[in-house]
Image 1 (tube, rainbow, N blue to C red):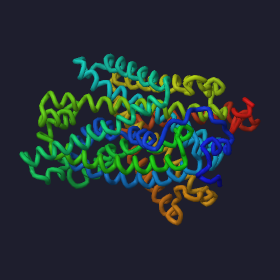
Image 2 (cartoon, helix red, strand yellow):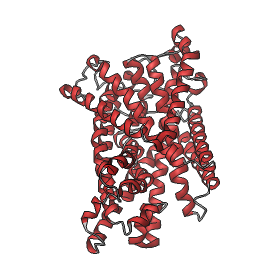
Image 3 (cartoon, rainbow, N blue to C red):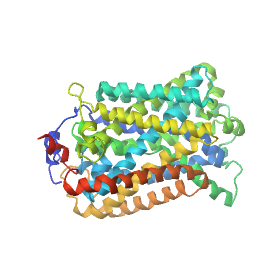
Image 4 (cartoon, rainbow, N blue to C red):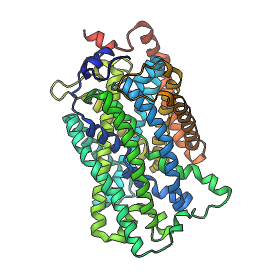
Amino acid sequence: MGEQPGLGDDRILSSFGYRQELRRALRSFSLYAVAFSIISITTGLFTNFGFGLQHLGPASIFLWPVAAVGQFLVALVVAELGTRIPLAGYSYQWGTRLVNAAYGWFVGLVGLAYMAVGGAAINFVVAAPLWATILGLNASDPQVLIVIAGLLTLATLGINIVSVALAARINNIAVFTEIAGTALAALVLLGLWARHPIHPASFLLDTGGAHGIGILRQLPYAALLGIFTIVGFELAADLSEEAVQARISVPRAVLWSEVSASVLGMVALIGFAIAIPDLHQITISPVPLYAIVRYWLGPALSGIFILVVVFSIFALTVVGTAAGARLIYAMARDGILPFSPTLRQVNARTRTPIVALLTMAALSLCFALFGYASDRTGGSAFLTLVTATAILPFVVYLLTVLAYVLRRPRLVALPGAFDLGRWAVPVMYLALAWVVIALAALTIPKDFWGADTVVGIVLAVAAAWYLGPLRRRLRTGAAGIGTGERAND
């Protein structure tokens, strides 16, 4: 791992034992747009703003900066790893090369589950109700929602099959719709509130009726707003093999996306929270942010606002599907997955991993159906899918930071590339502490145990495949780093 960052991308890839198969089309802004869109403050706020209000009132917004600082520590670790191991498959590659193939398998499968569950949560829980509202359909009918979620999954699949460049163009636009749909809209509401203040600024400290020890009990629920949202910046590294000057553009995309999303998200939260006209009515509203905007701007402008939001959420699912498929491709390239020879195929014309894309879409749809079944049987797709979407990336962060702590002294500094230097030790231990605290908040409350079950199933599947065929394949050399490349020579 000691090559100069100025080497050509293809030569760097070759030094890791792989040939260039995917098309390098993502320049710095496009890669930043990917990371920023995956974080998607719009999606996070629309998903969890009302949930935060239910548990800790407007004061819940002040847990956002806590998550922002914690995640910046993780982003620093990711940025350094992305510089030194700029490969598709990010978490799988880091775990494999820092520890061993077995460790990489577990990290990679959890990462894949995160993207599949996340896609299902966004399409079924967030996007489908918004589309149903726009189309005048019953947004509380699970059958309507699962049909819409299925159509959205097919649409994102089609865009990704055409090319990563088309997906990138959509995400480039989404950077501006994200800003318009959250920060700018919130600033407009803040200005309107300043002209006609309906309550004092101290309203932001309202805990929604929670007092004393009750506030402590509500913290894990209210913290979901930031913990769920400020994730995904690491997926810029998953597209490293399609990035131009990956060793420079990937760490920049990771860090700038996390910082800009954190700052703009806090601005948006302040604007929306201060503009709440009636706390009780907004708390019970199925779409709290829309209700706030509609109160101040009326039906016409709030309708435009919803369209901007819908596009931003759609862009997130487009790039999420792309990232998930690249992880499948990277793991299949090393023979780690079942049916690896098929899953690793890249279309010669579009230079996209079509079979991996189809698989990613199918996995996402399966989890959406799981959420549909949960709603139909009296459960909560929101609590199960949304909380699982928050837990799974933090399991990836935990395993990644642990590997980094163990192997960081062996990483060679690259001249001109991102390097934490003497700050590496405090950063990695603070990042580890933050991830453990966040995981505790996400797994201990009883209401989140359904999501814990989903995570347990994912880990059980990973263990079963490893203890079954995979361990033997790794031992005999039929799977592992560069296996697929050797098979094609």
